[in-house]
Amino acid sequence: MMLLRRPGQAAPLTMVEHVPQKSGEPGAEPTEEGLLTVLMPVFNERASLDAILERVLASPVKKEVLIVDDGSTGGTTEYLKEQVEGKVANVRVVYLKENRGKGAAIRSGIPLVRGEYVVVQDGDLEYDPGDYVKLMEPLVAGRSEIVYGTRFRFGYPPMRWANRLINIILAGMVRILYGAPMTDEATCYKAFRTETLRSIPLTCRRFEFCPEVTAKALRRGHTILEVPITYQARTHREGKKIRWTDGVAAIWTLLKYRFWRG
Image 1: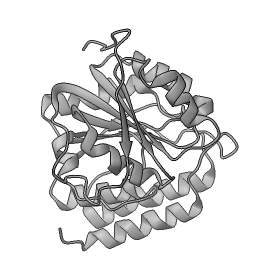
Image 2 (image 1 turned 60 degrees about the vertical axis):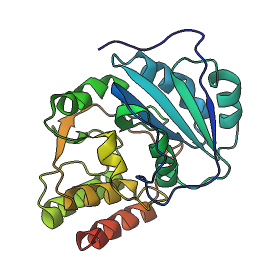
Image 3 (image 1 turned 180 degrees about the vertical axis):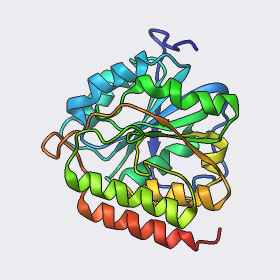
């Protein structure tokens, strides 16, 4: 697949005033066949934005990048407006007026996706955009409409014991409650056919995007395939934002939607 990058092509600015209550609401952008949208919610990621954008744009897939700035402070918004918006080919930027959380940022971006496929990308350096090819292959081949990148197929990479424990618990809950042989429910790298993601009504605001979309997709009969990816954990000192309370919320979300109707 070819890399789409044409120097001098402007990246249009989008201002978002609200968060849609359902990702599949009318008025969503039409999609382009074969295109991958890299949906990147960011909040105060100035230190890593240069490097992650370089890696994303270098990944060998036909793509666009849709950055959702979730009410950042400390230079992130200024960087996007001065160095990215209108200056980097195939990159669009959405600005939320206040910080609402990763889930709300993702929901804001879903109607604006232009690709036939979409993958969630964090604004840090924990995940490798070189893995897009592996994530895309089952989607393009029609073997599944949803593909997750698993960090744990061949063991556990270095990470805090608390993070490892909650990942083990969440994957185990998916296996027990939903009957899906999953090893990594909480992975950032979740790739979808865009029409499939838009069909799932989401209400998440923070990190409960992962368990909500997983639970609702499985309840709707979708098969989620996993492919192994590389991963380099960062620390809270380096900017990691997830808290222990988000783990509790994820457990509750998986329990709640086991009996969800919708």
